[in-house]
Length: 369
Ligand code: GGG
Image 1: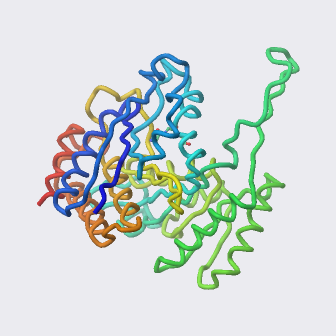
Image 2: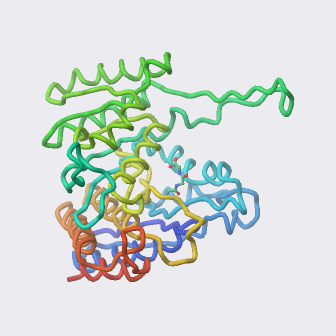
C-alpha cells in the first residue's frame, strides 16, 4: 500500500500539547493495523509568523500541502503576537477555502463516564445515547467573508459593512452531503438551521435549497429550526437531533455548544472535508489554542485523537486503500477513548487530575493492546 502522506501542523497554544498525543495514538494504530502513515511536520504558527514576513504561511504553502493526502492540524491563534482575525484568515481559513474543504463535519456525542451538565424533563442526568448527532457546517462561504469595509472611520458617522455570501453551488453541495449522511443513519432525520424570519433574504433562500434537495431524499425527515430555538433545544431536548446542517457561522456556534452540552469541548473533533479528494482534507479539534491553559499540561487530548481517527476513516476511502483496515483502526481508537473515559486517567476538564500526556498514553496503550 502506498503510504498516506500527512502534513502535521501543531500550530499554537495547546495545539502543540495535544498534537504529540494525537500522533502517539495514530502511530499505535498504524502499527497494529499495518497502515502506512508518513508524517511531515510544519512549524506554521503565530510564533514563527511565518519567519517574520507578516504572513502566517510561506509563499509556497499551497504547492507544498497539495502533495499531501491529509493535514493534521492542532490550533491557530496567539493574540499576544498576531491578532486573531489575521492568524485565522492567514492559515486555517485559507486551507479550508483554497483546498475547497466545503464540509466541516463535527460529531457530537455524550460518552459514558463523562459527567453531563444537562438533565432531562424529570431532572435526571442525560445518558449516552441521548446525545449522538452530527453538525454539518458549511465551511467555505456564508457569513465568513472578507467582503465589506468601514466608512467614516473613527467618526460619529462610522459605518461598518460585512457581507454574507451564499452560492447555489456552495449551498447545494453541503446540503447534499448532509442529506446523504442523514440517509445513511438509522433515524434518517435532518435538522436545517435557519433564521429565515430575521435574515430575510439569504435564509429563506437557504430553506428553499433544503426543500429542493429534500425531493431527492424521500426517506429523510426534515425539520427547519430557527437558530435561536435550535440552540435552546440543544440544551433542553438534545434527543431531537440526528444530523444538523448549518451555515458557516451558525455551524461554528452549534459545534461548540453541542460538545459543551456533552460535558467538555475538549472531546470534540472535526473533519474539514473535500469529499471529492481533489485536495487534502484537514482534521482538527474543534477547540482553539486556549492561551489561558497553555503550558499547564492539562489540555484534554481526546479531540485531537478522535480527529486522527476521523482522518484514518477518510483516508480509507482513497483509491487503493484497504478500507476495512482503516475502519478497524478508526473503531479501535474510538473504543480506546471510550474505555479511558470510563476507567482511565482523565484531564481536569473531566474531573480528573491526569496530564495531557498521561491521558494520551493511556489511550495509545489501549489502541496497541
Ligand atoms: N482547531 C481549531 C482552531 O484552531 N480554531 C480556531 C478558531 O477560532 N476557529 C474558528 C473557526 O473554526 O471558524
